[in-house]
Length: 306
Image (tube, rainbow, N blue to C red; front, side):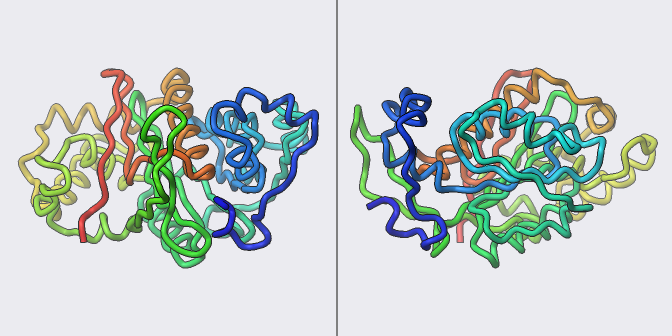
């Protein structure tokens, strides 16, 4: 059984005839067992803003249990009506909300997956370590202007993430186990030029993500950002990788407002990763997914080799 790896609290939950009708197309697409596995999973959404709102919508529509944890009244979905409003998307969905003041204080236990909006890499690093210790899967995302990025760290409750590849029409492979490295494995690699075996030439997209999310003071002046970027690039042995004009463009994107079409597209991509990871059907991005709305394309980065 594809559910045998799950502890009792995540075991298969039967669905009613009405739910069978509602999820009919999904059941035909990925099967009744996968749909049951989705409904037996519970996802915690921390700070549902930007691309996370689209991801949340797709998650609820799929029948996955959801807990919403906005950090403040400015975090999009907030207030006493949040559960009722989100539940309108799926009357058979299980939607809760919790009050928490920060991602650091969020209670992760009882969830299969955490999806968090983290514009600060150190905050994401700490969340990554907590999820790694608890064997809870994590998708941490951020969005700046036309660009968006998410980091995936997947587990089963008892070990590495396991899934079945699609190898033909209605054919699945034997279970495949994949280990996802924690974020510290990336951030603690001081010389990124050593990662060429992983990425080929070090990609500007990934370095840009590191620079922008590492500079967490919105609205700071260009000179401060250039000072931060120059120091960070030197520490990664990439001092000549970005020109002055490129850093100016990055600074503009770091202060850019949320662009809703980018939120919709990237949130949809994230929703696919949520469904694949929980249904354990299909290969997920491993372990960084980057999207550029200006180029209308995405890049997946494989994990750091051991």
